[in-house]
Image (cartoon, rainbow, N blue to C red; front, side, top):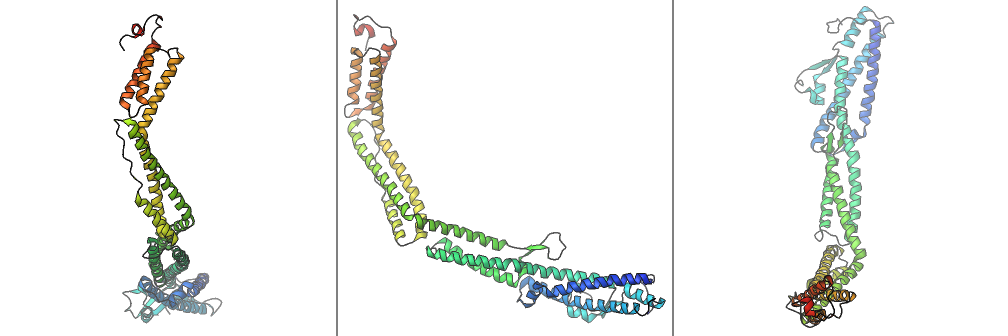
Length: 442
């Protein structure tokens, strides 16, 4: 076979031997890779799966590429075997042998019939499928095989990664979901009766659908790595799974709250009854105090005291009914609402008592102030002063009479205070002088 170029200069024996050694190593590496791809768990799963969507399309292309890879590898093996046979003819290859080896090792010496690529339907050969044959150099054929191998392996590894990651996680979450459903039913959390029960149904449907989609179309849940050219570069898309896992965790927290209600319901109901009872007693005290204020204090607006709210008692009875019938999911929100309302009611009752008794507190404060000034006057030796005694008695009669006019009584206390202050701050007057001489107009 003559040299027609583009093989270049004729190779010598050392170049031939080095080329054969390199091509032999490449042949071994390619064979190892192809056998590994053939035995890859992901490829075997793809062959036996009922695929849909993008995975079905890409697997059809990858399967064609793998078929073409073996055809290329066989042609590569045949060419390498022929070159080795020519080199083995004689220890020192002749010029004719070297020319033939040069064309075989460097030239486009490998010919593949057009039917080979047409049957394989390789996606990268579009536009040339009508050709009767294709010719490759051994190095170009290696590059072609590397390209097909990388794209095929990328698809297989991606599908296998999704299958390895998602179905197992979904199954574990589904098992946890079943346990949660049983617990939910035990505390009355059921679809149509409690939002958490509806959430459990929705999570169940979503996980079932997700698993079916992952099994039939794993590549729909694959996120390729940006800028990575390595086969299988990327990660499984866990977005839907993670969202359902968070939703299930929210449901578990809700059920835990219901379980806590079941454990603490009796004590919480007892505390509720106690708070409402204290509120009722406080309101009763306020009503009694209002009657006392109206009898003892004149010319004062006394607020009306309302009765205990019957709605809270009715809700408390409903809560007790829920507890008796183990309707924990309904008891939980009702107890939380009642506890807040009961505290508000107790606060309202206390504020009502304070508002009603305010006039009595004012009267008590005036009485205390009057007595305090009397004691102060006594300490300064003025307890027997007729003018102070007169002012004191006037204020005291007003404060200890019923009904007491607080405004008038307060003015009387102020007059006594001013008189005491004037005496305590003025120089002592001789005994013989009368009160009028010392004070002037009273």
